[in-house]
Amino acid sequence: MKRNLLNQPIFRLMVPPIYGIMMYLLILMINNDLEQLSETILNDELMLCAVLAFLTSESVRFVIVLVERRLQENLRKTGSIVMLFGVSLLTGAVVNFFAVDAYFRYFEDYQYFSSYSNTLYTIVITYSVSAMLYTLFFLSIHLLSIKNESELKKEDLKRQNLEHQLEIFNNEINPDLLFQSLETLISLVHHNLDKAEDFVDRLAIVYRYILDNRKKEVVALDDELRAAKNLIYLFKEKFPEQLSLEIKNEKFGIGKYMVPNTLPMVLDCMINGSIISPWQPMNIVIDCGGEDDYLVIQHKENDKLSNNKYIKNRYQNLHEAFAFFTDKPVIQIKAYGDAFIKLPLLDIKENV
Image 1: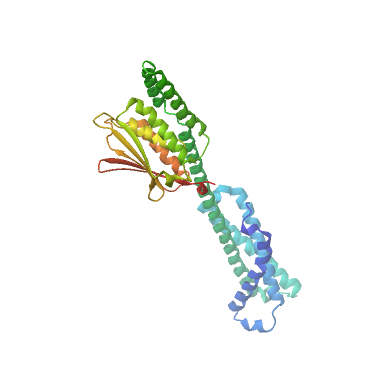
Image 2 (image 1 turned 120 degrees about the horizontal axis):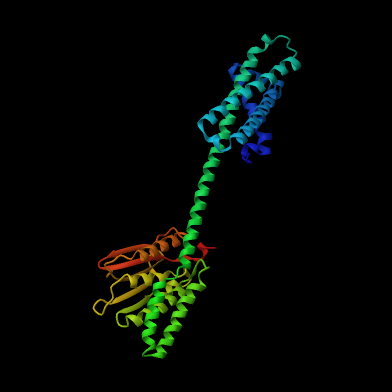
C-alpha cells in the first residue's frame, strides 16, 4: 500500500484521540446527557471512546491494506468499493462489540448483558458508521491519487512525444536542398571556379550548422539569422535577381533564442513552395521586433499549384518542436496577398 495520509504515523497517533472526543460528545448528545461534561473532563467513558477510535481506525486500516493488496487496480470497480464498505462496516462492528463488551464486563463489573446492551448497541452503531466514514476518506484519497497519477502519466507521455518530435526536427536534413545545391555547383564549376569554391564553403557552413546543433535544445537568434543568410546565398545562385532577404529590428533579437534550424527550414519551405520568376520575384522580410515577442517572416503569396506533403510535415514538426518550450503557438496566416509566419521568441529563463 502506498504511503498516503492514512498510513502516516502522526495521523495514526494524533487523529484517533481527537476523533474519540468527538464521538464521546456525539454519544452524549444521542443519550441527551451533555450535562455530564460539567462533572469531569477526563473520565473513563471519554478514555473508552478514544481507545475505540484507535481500535476502529487501525482495524479498518488493516482491512483496507489487505483488500488493496488483493484487488490492486480492481479496487476502482463499483463492486469492489461496495465490498470494501461492507467489510469495513462488519469489522468496525465486531471490533467495537467485543471491546465495549469487555469494558463493561471487566472494568465496570456488569454481570448481565441486558444491563448495558442499549449503551453497547449505541456505541457499536456509532463506531461502525465511523468505520465507513474512515473507508470513504481512504477511497477519496486513493481515487484522487489514481487520477493524479493518470494525469502525470499523460503529461509524461506528452512530454516524451514532444521530445521525440523535437529530436526529429533537430535531426532533419533536407535532401532536396543538397541535390539542388549540387546541381547549382555543377553549373558553377563550368564557368566560375572561384564562385564554385565560395558556394561549396557556404554549403558546408549550412550543413555544419545543422549538424552542430542537432543535440541542442535552443540556439541564439543571432546564429539562426546568420544561418538564414547563408541559406539565401545558396538559393540566390539559382535565383540571382528574383530572391532577396531583408532583416529588420535585429537589435530586438538580442538575448532571444529559437529552436535550432528553424529559420533555415522555414526559408527552405517558403522558397521551394513558391513560384519564383523574373516576373514574380520573392522578397522575404524577417522582422525581429514583432508584437508579443514574435519573429515575423513575410513574403508575397505565390504558392505552387501542387501541395508538397513533405513541406506540410516539416511545418507540423515545427509546431510540435516549439510546443515543447512555450505555450505560444507558431502562427501561419495569409492576408492581403502576403503570407506570414510568426515564430515565438524564447527567453533563456524559460528553458533553464
